[in-house]
Amino acid sequence: MAMENNAFTEGIAPGGLRTKNDIRILLCYLLTSVGAPIRRDDIIRIMQENSLCNYFEVTEAIAELTEKGAFLTDPDDPQALIAGPAAREIAEQLTGAIPLSVRDKAVAAALNLLAQAKREKENRVVIKKTDAGYKVTCHISGGDVELMQFSLYAPDLYQARLIKHQFHSDPECVYRILLAAVTGNADLAEDSIRRMNLHRR
Image (cartoon, rainbow, N blue to C red; front, side, top):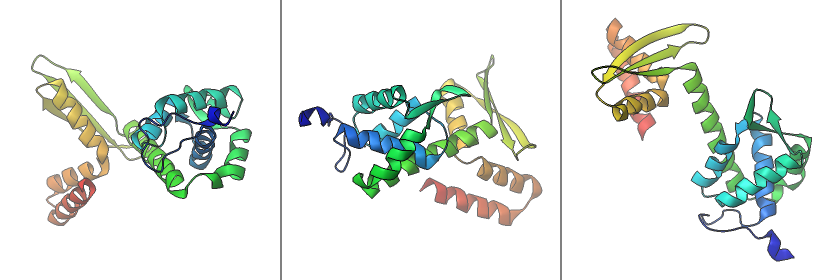
C-alpha cells in the first residue's frame, strides 16, 4: 500500500517532491500563503517550471483537493482556485513535512506570477494588424488615471509580441525613460537606464 503514495519522478529536480501526500501539502501551503486566487494552469506551471513535481501528479492532486472541498472555485473566475478551511488546516498542521526551500520557491514563483498578471491588467497592450504590419499600443496606468499611451510599429506578429513582453516586464521603467526624454531630465534618464540594466541581469 505504501507504494501507492509514490509519485512519478519524471521532470523533478533534486529536492523536488516525490510522494502524493507531499504534493498535496505543498499545494495547500501555496494557496494558503498567497491568499489570492490562482488559476489551475498557473499552479501547474509554477510546479513544472520549478521542477517541484510531475505534471500528472500535480494535475491529479489539484483535482482531488478540489473534489474534496479543500480548494474552492473563485466566484469571479471558474478556472481559479482559493484555499478553503480544509486546505488552510492542512497547511498549518503538516507544512513542516515539506522542505523550506521548496516552500519558498513555490510561493516566490506564485507571487511573481500574480504581480506580472497585475502589471498586465493595469498596463494594457493592444496589438492591431494593419496593412503595413502591426500597431502596438501600450497604456501606462497610474491607478485610476492613464499616465501615458504610445503606439509603435512592428513589421510582424513576432516583433509585436516581443514589444508587448518587454513592456510588461517593467512598465514603470518605460514610463520613466519616456518622461525623461520628453522633459530633458538627464538625471532621470540615467537613473532609469541603470534600473533597466539591473532588472535584466
